[in-house]
Amino acid sequence: MPQKTIEFLLRRTQEGEWDITAIVKDANAVPVAPINEAKVEIIGFGLELTDPDGICQFRDVPPGSYQVSAEKEGYVKQVKRLPLEEIPK
Image (cartoon, rainbow, N blue to C red; front, side, top):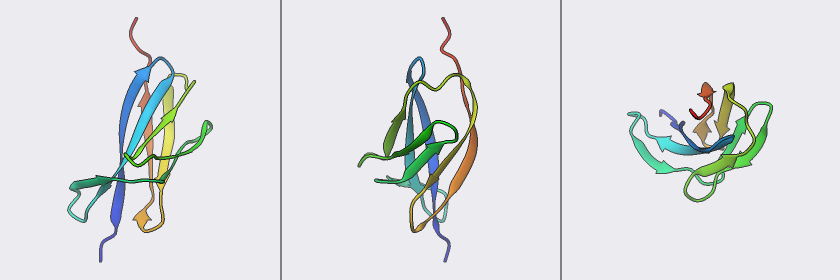
């Protein structure tokens, strides 16, 4: 039986602040729900747990390309390299 996977949605809220949303994708890769209390980590900047809406926020992260991981028991752990880009002035 295929396991559910975690997918990331990334949103910049302001300079140096990022919301990362963890959502569940079913066996057909269709988004079905946010994941509460998933462990999301930007490697080198710490670990946060997602809230009931599947969102966690990271602050003071400079622009660059980072490895981001998300995991929760019962789901396939995901690790991706995500570009966090500077806000144009």
